[in-house]
Length: 371
Image 1 (cartoon, rainbow, N blue to C red):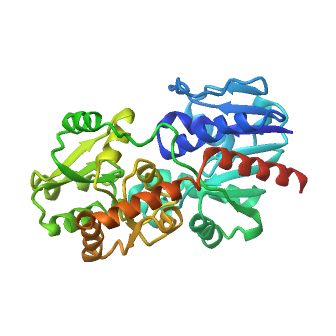
Image 2 (image 1 turned 180 degrees about the horizontal axis):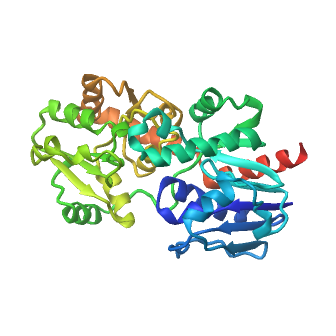
Image 3 (image 1 turned 120 degrees about the vertical axis):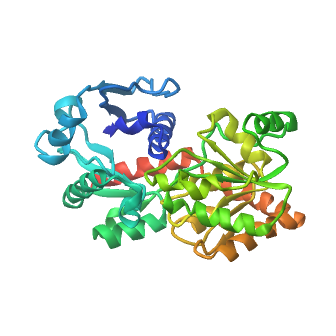
């Protein structure tokens, strides 16, 4: 079987980039039989240096084309088959916002519908492009991979794709994120980012659906003087989250901005808990990252988050500031509860692995070709 995969999005440093890179690397590990043709299109960026894609059954086709031409060629006019560039394939795997014309069986991964449920988190032009691309997807796709049951449900309700054309294949925690037990290392990283003493940790892009304003309100209602709230994340589409209201915050709230990847494990490992009561997630990767590092999780009872957290997390109503605060307080004040959550978290995170993701994705390829 010849398998084509669009890896263009791997260069942007997003969650989808991480998904694509992890999937491809693990497919190559578990599958020595089939041939892979990787399609990469980027005018200005190169593939990350840590992307391990070299194998005897893998061919990479780089195609440098301006983004202004890529959209009409592959997604708007939809007349130029991608086989013109990578050769014949039996199945072609794309991401949800790029479904190029292809003669082979077509598989796409849908991560979430945040741009529809929370349109303020996406630029209007991006939203319009994605809606048009979903139109092509609905017409031509042979199988959708949803990264959670919640995303599967949204795919059925929003796109009208029948259940038999959707498979749920979960993501997994990054291999480079792991528990740091050395307190000196943790303290050194804390000092680097101006963190003192105990802290709650929020890992999220600064945008409305991450629910940061309610997180801050719930934290400040606790009134614990020697406890900080550390917010890690770069700015999203809604710049109001850096406005006057946030500038009035007291010193017990620390905004780090973007954090070096090598520091993230230490920050998770040193935190009292992860504050992640998001309004909507397609999966919720920080939940697994935190659990892998021995960090308890307070998260939302909405969308995919209960699936990912399982019995290990405290689930709260993300619209209820008081309930969020109670979740924080339970972890902060009850050491026995915290230790139980850490233990359950280690069990929960083992249910997810990229090897498992790769094997289940390969099964999707095999099944769709047999149809």
